[in-house]
Amino acid sequence: MSLTPESRHDLLIIGAGISGLSMARYATGAGLDTLILEQARQAGGCLDSHRFRGALDGFWLELGAHSAFNSYGKLLEMLETAQSLDRLQLRAKVGFRIFADGAVRRISSQLTFSELLLAPFRWLKLKKTGCSVADYFKRIVGQRNYTAVFEPAFNAVICQPAGSFPADGLFRSRPRRKDIPRSFTLAGGLQTIAGILADGLPARFDQTVRDIRRTDDGFIVTAADGGKYHSRSLCLATPVADAARLLQPAFPELAAALAQIQTATVESVGVAVPKAQLKLPLVAGLIGRNEAFYSAVSRDTVPDPVWRGFTFHFRPGVLDESGKLDCIAQTLGLPRQELTNVVSKTNQLPALRVGHDEWARNLDRILAGTQLALTGNYFTGVAIEDCICRSRVEWERLQRGCG
Ligand SMILES: Cc1cc2nc3c(=O)[nH]c(=O)nc-3n(C[C@H](O)[C@H](O)[C@H](O)COP(=O)(O)OP(=O)(O)OC[C@H]3O[C@@H](n4cnc5c(N)ncnc54)[C@H](O)[C@@H]3O)c2cc1C
Image (cartoon, rainbow, N blue to C red):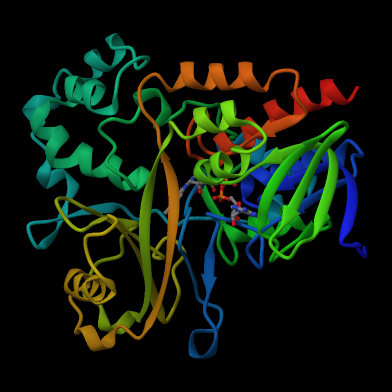
């Protein structure tokens, strides 16, 4: 499709991460003339599987999301519609270990089992609603277990200090599809999902949106290169801080509400090393306890005959690039000069807090009656499936307005 510098659409979507792609799939499925504008060169956002070239051709590692589950019903529905369920790959069953006090340790060796005896009863009795992760889990597993294992493990899951996160936003219970492996990826990594969903969708890459204005019959969106896009409906599928900034001129009330959500930065560094050089047993990942990194996610879940890969997710602002490589070398037990295949990425995730449900309800009240949709990982939770569920809810609202 050739686009003039000024083009007109039913729906414009800003952002081609899983939130924007899922919104676009719903809209194009219903026949809407839709266009995605994405600042990067490719679709994916936090679905970012780095694919090496040269000597490591064919080897990839995840710089963002690494696991999808058979409880991600809406994601699976989309892959099924795209006839791609046969591309799912089972992840090998290897366990996590803790890296603490300078050594790799088994998780069980760090647990105080006497504190866990009553945990199942406490778990049945306690309600998550209104509790932070720290309040809820400390009461279930005990203070010592929480500090030694659970807190670092939860930090690793959401790549940020998890204690103040709402307990009900961390793990959401959803029905599982028994015909799908419990935890899966795809050949080439989870970014392959973005490729599948983006296939055939009208999208313009390398298009950073700079400005959004309201018009009598919709919206006008201006990109950094001066391109102008008109639409009846508009969906922002960017990280929350970008949405707040973009909406400030035209929707100051919404922008102020969005600015209340704090953002956690994750500095990720991925390394690929020859298998033969490592003594570390096969692991799904290492959980850092009192370390500069929250976790080191491993590629051992999709074993490669020659290479192993690890992505270290660092706390922001603690180590510079050189310090991060020293830390990685020390953790993996390698001389620093062996780290030659290195890639890095900085991601932003929302730092949700208790009371977030009320915040989200208020935001939806402000959005009601508008043809503006907001989707992303800052509504019910940060998981891929949470993003798609939000897109679905917003798509249904827009559709009622389009009728
Ligand atoms: C390190 C890490 C590990 C994770 N692990 C998992 C996991 O294992 N399982 C899981 O379910 N979830 C995981 N998550 C969470 C999940 O990956 C994300 O919450 C989800 O992918 C976010 O999708 P999104 O589309 O809302 O946002 P993003 O993926 O951030 O996409 C937003 C897009 O908007 C674009 N954009 C921003 N501003 C503009 C602009 N002005 N103009 C044009 N485009 C713009 C960006 O370039 C980006 O492509 C992880 C996240 C991270 C960071």
